[in-house]
Image 1: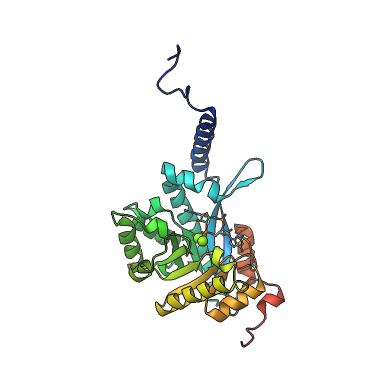
Image 2: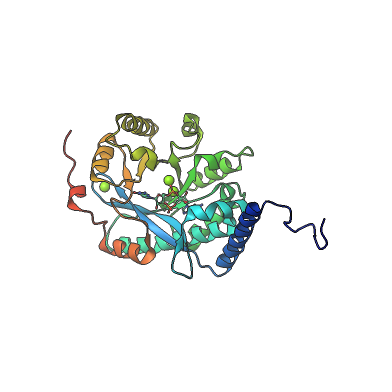
Length: 296
Ligand code: C2E
Ligand code: MG
Ligand code: MG
Ligand code: MG
């Protein structure tokens, strides 16, 4: 080796690999800094009853705002945080912030005699496999003063594949305490119907990839109809993700989906805007999207 080469130098590596490693290292320390300065932000996207447009809840979606005003989306940093374990402190902050916000919003709803709304929080595989996870959720709920029944934990099928069985045990514990569990992105992973039979799940979220084809693609629409049928026969709630058009809303409602989430209603928004929606009491839609369900 050349003089001065230590065991930790990257000499000899492909320069492209070196660049990737350097970028990853920079982003990883960026995440550490953002964690210590709590400079993440939660956006909230409404989840709406498909039949009457009533507000059902919000999904909390994390963002990483940058000093230059741009915002890094979760797909660009959650996988890294997951790989480094930084998702544990980040996930704790997300859970505490979202439950706290939901409690405030429900105080406003209660004062107006409106039904409480739920808050949905995405959790990653690492969090689900952490034996301390149920306690963390319990503490967040207690500190926020939020009814466990108003929290939905969103997990993907892949996050539930865990040989040690901790993820499953954690979900059962949460379910026993009244917390809801949503199976996120349903249909995209290695979906197995045995999951639906065995998992302590209360809600199915049909992935946007399926919803996209409703109602124009007959095969896709038939699949969505079938998924809704299975969910209903297991008494699961169904949320359609990525609802973008009034036609989709109508077709999904007719097929029996309960709730929808998507750009038709609203994009994920900063907390101030979400609070304005809460004060308004409902999600205002273009009238064409709110029209009563015409009989088939
Ligand atoms: P997800 O949980 O399936 O969230 C739904 C994603 O679909 C969000 O993207 C949302 O902005 C987007 N979306 C909703 N409606 C529409 C629509 O009508 N059209 C289109 N084109 N997109 C729509 P986002 O916020 O970029 O989040 C991406 C993923 O990152 C999430 O997918 C989730 O897996 C993950 N994620 C987001 N926030 C968190 C978090 O707090 N913790 C963890 N562990 N993961 C998170
Ligand atoms: Mg209703
Ligand atoms: Mg989700
Ligand atoms: Mg999803």
